[in-house]
Amino acid sequence: AAASGGAEYFRRACALQDAALELLRVAVADRISVISTQIQDALNLPKVPLKADKLEASLVYTRFHGISKRSNKLITIARRRLDALGDGSVAAVGYEDLLTLCRNTYCGAREVLLTSTVRNHMDILKERHGLVGMTRLASVFLIRLCTVETALYLDFFGDPDKRRHPRKAVKGSVQTNDEGKSEEGDEDKEERNQEAAATRRQQHNNTNNNNNNNNKVPAAATLASQILSEDSTFRDAEFQSMLGGLCSSLHRTIRRGLVSILDLDVLCQVVSVLREERSVANKSPTTMAAARAVSGVIQDAQERLIFCANTALHKEVVRFKPTPADLNYPGKFLGEKPKAAIVIEDDKRDSKEPSSTEERKEEVNDPSATSDPNDAVAAQLRVYESWFPPMRSVLRILSKIFRVVEPRVFEDIALQSVQSCTKSLKEGSIYILRASGQIHADLFLVKHLLILREQLSPFDIQLRSVERQLDFSEAGKAVSRFLANRNRRLFSMSTENALITLLREGVSVQESSVDSKRDLEDCLRSAC
Image (tube, rainbow, N blue to C red; front, side, top):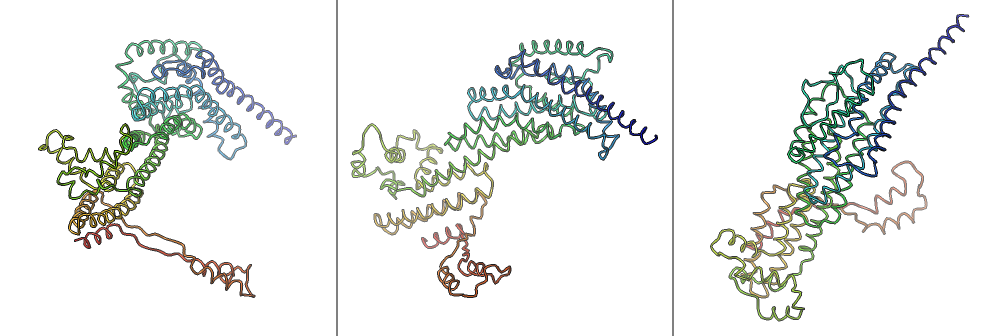
């Protein structure tokens, strides 16, 4: 009888627990779903995105703030009950499933309501401000969005005992608690009061929209400092995944723009701006999702920058074919014009489409290119234009990418480009040797090698690497020995296995040390 009574008590207790969990589910999860559906119907989301400057004062936030206080009380009851039962309890499984359901429902609803608005805002910023301006403004917008969303999430799922409540509301930010309201007010009255207050804020924001755009970042930073506390609820995996999905719109928009960009200056500006915004996002734990999204975009921008830099170096240095005008030394230092034969050769082309060689000769040899010969900038420009084009391209590209790519990547690019530049200088000196004599050839090589060494010194790089290559010179003999061996052990689990012996004897790794600085110094000493 006692056993049957205990079983009946347990059955009834489980039934009561299931009923209580069902009431909590209806009051929290179903309520969030209903509110989300009502907002979508009222604002025609996601077909018609909202304007970003009206987002925080719209129903997307006011309706959720209206149910946040009651939902937080119910979720707190479930969480405390779960803590009292312990992780190993059978009854705790129902509470864990309930909290997971509430978090998933909330995050799914917020993602549906915000995704179209965020993506539309990114596209508008790109159209109005270009890729570089859009990068900064979009990063600021995402940092603000993460901060406000974190505050709203803590209103629903945060621990009231650990939450830090400021005494005064932040101007321009969404207030996330209603301490001044009476506990006896019902939920509908609370929602109506919240919506009325949001309407007043929206009218005020629309009147002063242009003046308040620059103040959004300080408001976000202040709000982040207020919600930071010992409560780490905002680090929940579901919520961080939702924020990551919203912030992925930045990656989606910028990546489409990066594919078509070939200008190194623009790519360098994009990487610099993104690094600055990432440092801002990393200052607060509430904006780590934005920081991760920005980091992903930085990697893509750096990959595009490295590709464009290597393409430019290959085109302007490795595959460079000098013309007589490019090797007109010492004529370039003396201001001599190109010979008539070179001009006649170029005149065979269409006069309406001058070649790049003609444009380069006009820039270098036209004395009217600089208005004042005594001007220091003009004199420096003439000196720069007198450099050999491959060396000029190498130094220009390396100076641009020095601070926007990883040090190892930069050193690898610099190593290859210096090798190609030194080879091109040697080939140019051979041409000058045949055209103008040994003295001019040596002076050309010494001058440019000294300039190259001087310009590379601020980078503080080693220009040293170890190249490994597979040597198959002994592969034929190893195969012959393998076939001649009648007692080969193909399935032996030791070092005497015939296949392992074949690979060990037939293939070897050859290592060679490459030191571009040493090669540069050797070339300079031989020229002197």
